[in-house]
Image (cartoon, rainbow, N blue to C red; front, side, top):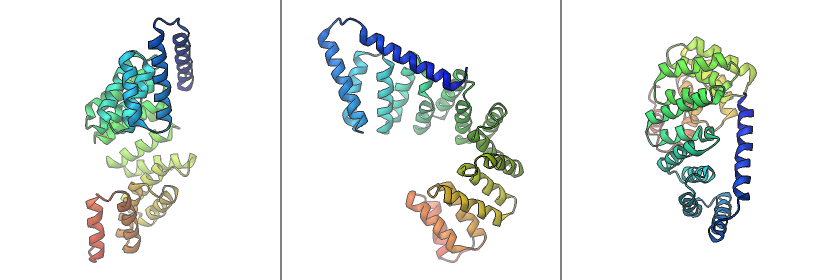
Length: 288
């Protein structure tokens, strides 16, 4: 069954459950009325972006209805908005056990584990998603991306390759495969894969970045600069594009362009001491 259809049917199932719950005869009118008021108020606070105010209300709802997946999902997302990633992960894990649509916990669950420095748990969650939705290309992409982020390029390459074979036109997987191919010393293959993505989607910034990096690795600085400038035009605040563009400009001896790229990057990430050191070197007239 296609992913979109499965998720649509899942949404209908959730709606049906909600209708059944709301249509059940009340057993405690006061408790039901209190629950409804809490639900309405918490939903309004979430919609208004007042997550700190909504949190204790949703926690109260969860305590009263611990198996209600709707409240668990809301609780997990509130924790995410507040940057409370450990609590978000715990809520998503509970959600998986009671929800009729457990795949809705992804990719938030593996991302939450990464943010609290638990790569093994993130990988485990990603593997569970692939097992749960093997026909969903996003599950393969996020598992490959997690391997990539944890510097396990061998498994990332294998995961992206398998995903690419099954979903050859899913650009995120193709770009990921191109990127890891470059990181594992295959710049020609990386260039080919990036060009295939760009043939279908010319403004894909990830593919433009990988193509620029591949051309730089192959010694074509002028070609790399041209591609990276296009990537910068498409995504002006993409930090990786700014960093690589600055490096290529340095290699070409264009200190002004390099300085502009690094300064733009520092405006977004002022704690990047490595980029600050590059700027200082440029100001001192040092060699790239």
